Image (cartoon, rainbow, N blue to C red):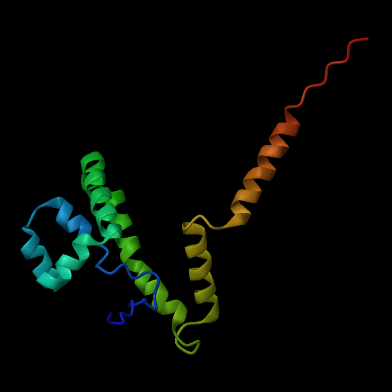
Length: 143
């Protein structure tokens, strides 16, 4: 049995395919071959990508989104945001002499917040709900 080594990307934002690739296919403006050629994806790579469970989910989501929203401004912004993850990753991991620490910190905080992992937001929401609950408390004393 041959030893196989799984290639683990050093950047967790790497999908294994270009982030806009599923949407390009879902739009069906060009053939699969034409889209693959535009992205520099050969037949072997296409065969690997199309069997990837993550890609199948992304393609299905792209088809559903196009059915619901069409090519809306929000969808275009979402595509850009996904593509910009790579830029953010590169800036965060660049040497300090190239990118100031405060820029890196802001990018990290934004990424955590965008991913919904910012516990402080949840804690603030719970505190506000508790305060509202207390403010609406009514006591009736019958003597």
